[in-house]
Image 1 (cartoon, rainbow, N blue to C red):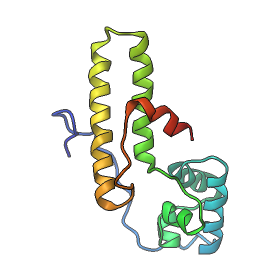
Image 2 (cartoon, one colour):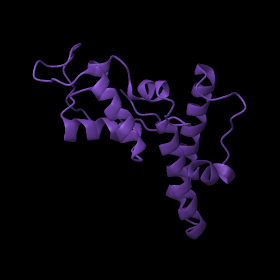
Image 3 (cartoon, one colour):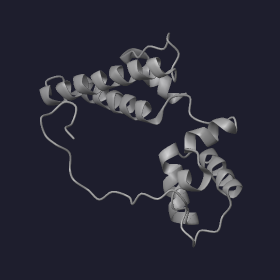
Length: 152
């Protein structure tokens, strides 16, 4: 599959085997895994970090296999969860870092272009999340208020 802002293809890598049920050696119950997800998220871990921590510390092969739900769905059921999607937050953080860099290095044209591409990706994601109902229609990304938005 091609990348968004380049003509190059992505790197090839191995894929996880298709499996609908957890392996036979896994003994934790669905409720235990859900409690661990909520507990781990409460310790300031992002949703992707929750999956990694549960895999490495507790031996949970795949949260979706065990519970039948994704991490964000489990968190929303328990009244927690991120206000903004994680991919959008990561792109906004990248744009903030690029803005800070360009404040000090005005003539850095390569990173000026990288900022344009990153903000384009942010706008595209916001448009998608408006259409799917994840973000309210009045939510707008602006570089001036992005740092305040992320720090909350």
